[in-house]
Image (cartoon, rainbow, N blue to C red):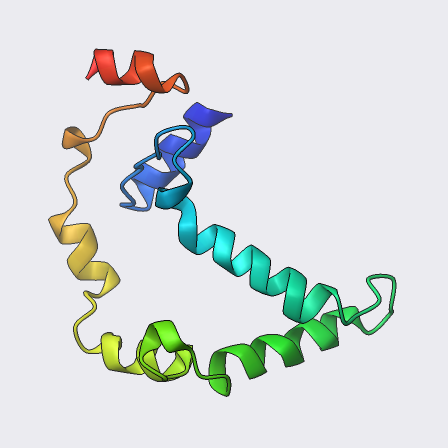
Length: 117
């Protein structure tokens, strides 16, 4: 499974960079968004509701297009995305710059992987 995932990432010109185990500071964005989801979405909805997909879509629209975020200097994620679009490389530019021969298959054991490097 892990090999298949890494090969697929290489096909898509995506660099695979696993984080070191027990390094929550490197995983802060994921942890923060999970906390926000729990506090602002899941606590307010019935997960067995038939209109859960619609509720999720409404919440995502609100969160990304209307709710301002301190971490984005009081901008919405949508506003920040629009600002970054001009400086973000296109898929074609990324593929042209990506060299799969410089990538290697990584071992799931972090310490072993570091020694193999």
